[in-house]
Length: 437
Image (cartoon, rainbow, N blue to C red; front, side, top):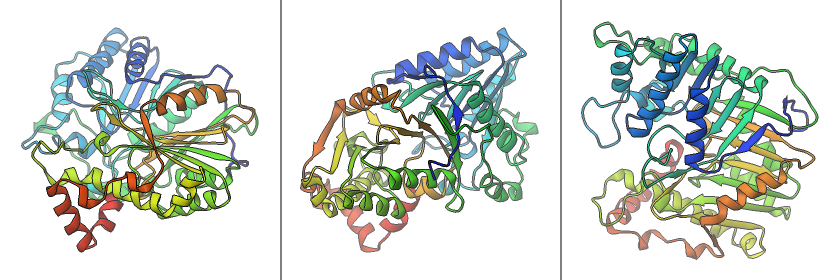
């Protein structure tokens, strides 16, 4: 499959590796300030906090300086209209957007995309900050922790790609498939005249999204990038590309995922890869580096069980593949750096193909969320050193596992977690939970 794929030709100096969230934030702000024609930002959310407001203010200032500048921000509709988990009352991010745009002389468009009728059944997980002829691609959303505004940060990947063709392809898809759809609405409407999307349009939106694709002039040789978009299990180009990367790899894979809970089809491909004597390095976040981890000294709530569910999935996989760990074929690296969190995604194959994506490579991403990714093909290894340096940077705060017993069992967890997970396992609810978390 991958050999037959075309891509957008790239120049040798087209990619820059930003590496840290602060470099990512600085680049994003600079590009916004210097934008000439258009800015299209897609993310799960733009938070009402210090970093989120800084990005929003930068966008509004850019619009004020250049009223002809086309600015569109697209976030998940449901996520924008609710508060943070555990917060009660009407405290969604859309209240910030509404307030700011009502006062703005030159307002910008902030649109809510309802991928499904309910957030739990699927969200806008599309990534890409498209500014003029460049794309900053990252799995990060826009808030304090993703942008390292304060002491803590959420570690992600950040790539800057200079390519007018890629920027145009990604911008055109957003405009055609999202902006112009009846299910997508402004999040800045005054409450007295607000018109929400029709329920029928929202329910049928997923069918239209499933047909989405990036259009571009294809090159089949040299340095190139291929954009993918996917929603649902059927005809999902992104999922097919992930499986093809594993199946067509000849020597080694380097995989990043924050939550180890791969779909069954991906597990089978990884197992085949190992049985064929090929190497896999997996970098996964420690349970304490999970977004939902609650320290034992704090009050426990059911959402705090999520990191432990993922850890048990990792333990189960490591136990089954202990033979490969013993042979040095499977190398599991667990990331932990102080109280920061881990959010990296992507796959590199043989040092020649690199998928950068926002997909968590789990059943939810595989079937429920709207995801995308960029496959970078570098057959001659022009960027091999830069990707190797990025991988070394990622591994800096990791610990390698040599035996599955290094991962705790349920019996070793804090009492509230142990009680809840035992109940979940007893009624076999973990099977359902792993499909939607």
